[in-house]
Length: 362
Image 1 (spheres, one colour):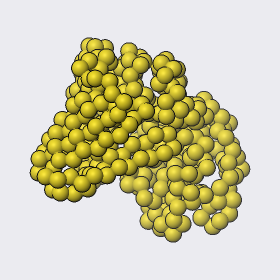
Image 2 (cartoon, helix red, strand yellow):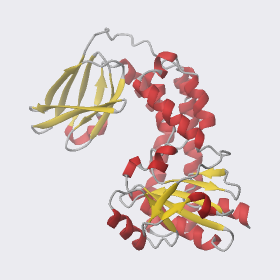
Image 3 (cartoon, one colour):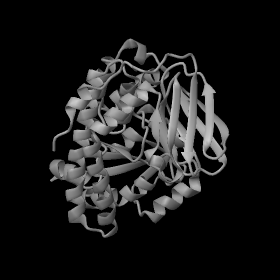
């Protein structure tokens, strides 16, 4: 499949046609939107901002100041509409019954994002189609089809990621590049993303998002393949402290981050269980790290999903200390650790975990 790399290389960054302002105006005209409260949300470092106005006959307006272009979200009862907010006159126009097709104009940064999105749409559309097929195959418990879909999805995601990486390299001064790196941190590796980030203009790297990524990439480096796992201690379901170095005892360990409230995690648990049952007699164990806050719900999920391996948690949710140590920003997430305590693979999902274990244990 050919991606339109020429589009990636030719995206405009000048913001031509958008007059520089010291404030922003976000004007909305959404046909069919009932009178309701509309929210404008944005994250600036560790602080979250949420403004609201009342939409009348689908019309509304926000005003304010943006120190730098940031990813923002217009929220209605139906859905979130992401766009880049900056000091300019921005318009959102569309229909309430098709909010995914809202037209956004007036933001030069958003125009750049739209061009990138359009250039990789051929592959993202294929990914979306295969994800639907994957769900259907999973419901039908068709393991053969799931394995084939896993391989195809991995291939397509790799193509998409390569296109994003190409964009970042050729657009070192675009705020869009910062947010593409953030997206890639969920599935990428430090040895790719670290140099991409260092290649960005200094002005970007000192922004709120730049500072966030600096911390996140440092955490990614600690979980990179080839890194030594750091020791930690957390309590199990019985309240007993489990020290990781004592637990692994020279065995292969899957360090599995999940939570009872995480749908994708619960869907992945049967795959982990299948791999565990196949290789548990071959020097392989699993240690679950839960990002739960409710002890009862954590315990119920372990029983319902039939997970026989040890589970630990400090019941701090996303502030779980082990999770923070490794910069876990999305779950499910996992690391496969060898007998010497070295990370040899990460984020093995679907049939990938069994396949990797078969390579090293059979």
